[in-house]
Length: 214
Length: 214
DNA sequence: CTAATACCTGCATAATTATGTAGTTTAGCC
DNA sequence: GGCTAAACTACATAATTATGCAGGTATTAG
Image 1 (cartoon, each protein chain N blue to C red):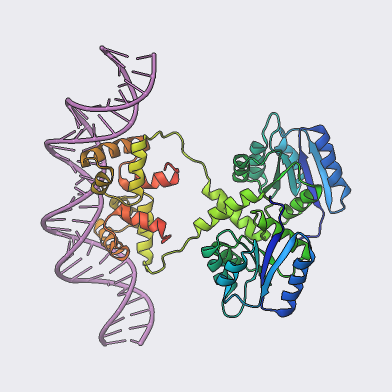
Image 2: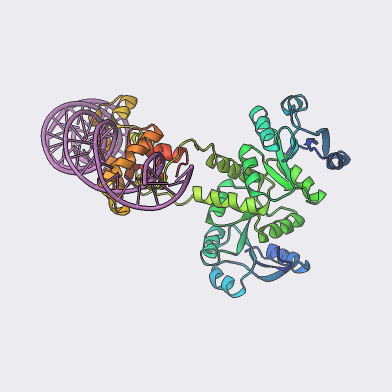
């Protein structure tokens, strides 16, 4: 990781908290405070001007919510890491934040040292998050990587056609897309069916998706 | 989180490292060392007897690899958290570890304080992992939660039938499964097509999966 | 009570798909 | 050079699917 200082912006409507966060960031040599704002109404311009490495974002601000703000930041400055700050460990909000593009989130009651860690983690690509979110994310991750059926060997063309099938294409459309005759499409699909032990397009699609053949 | 001590087992074939890890765990009042083993050949019995909260597992051990060992632990004691320890930041191995059931992993060169943090995190349901893994997992997570098409309102029966289609069922099979006539299946599918603006089973399946309608 | 909704059934026809058989071309391998 | 795998083309038939039309029942909201 680069040994530069980490540039931090803060969005927090509570004045006392905003100032104490600012102080925390300013005090440490490894951080540099870009600026602290009480709302995110102009976040696009503000971020564009100062380009922080990390933004600390209160999830509930008047005007523009933290979640909406994250989306704006991610759409315009995908490299800027955003850490959400919440009072409550609200799974739903955190989920939505992460989906909007936040890389992590911290409870406001967290110790300053935890917050510092989180900022550092975020800056170098990590994902500081709460245990309950982490376990949900991990669980989902595992589901996505369940056993893959590798016994089936499809040729390049067959994979191409199977992919088209899963995208909802008909024989005719596949023939056009691949510049081959419809009879050839039939031929390949026949072979695919044999290899997958199925007898219809939907079965093939289902199996392809389940076994991650494509 | 429970204020009990965290019971830790260690699997590590390198004697020096095993002993220094043991010492680290023993020294701290918040941890209790169950036992340290040089290999995982009898991990099922060993884990069953002592039931640790967290296992520190070397990823590369002679006899039974750490990844295989994780699987055994997870299959038999799903509540035991396993943290993998690796020398290299090998994405593939870590991915496989996580899929096997590990909740996190640490580089062996990590500072003791980081390891302690990781054990604590793991014990309370967290997922201590490396930034590169974290970001991959997060990315995947977002993909799974991309915008859902909520404009389409399917009735209960229609959803049921659409689900059957995505599982590769034919009209006939759906009719049997739902105990309705094949003409009724036709009727419902016609309506589904109208709502989804499609004209074939595969298109419907494709759209259903893409828009997470089911 | 009436309208609306979801669910159900039947019939008919055109289009598409499933499956078999049969042969050609092309690129890489021993 | 001959062999093999992958890709391609063609024709034929049975089965399934797509779509339209017509109408029945049951539950619910106004």
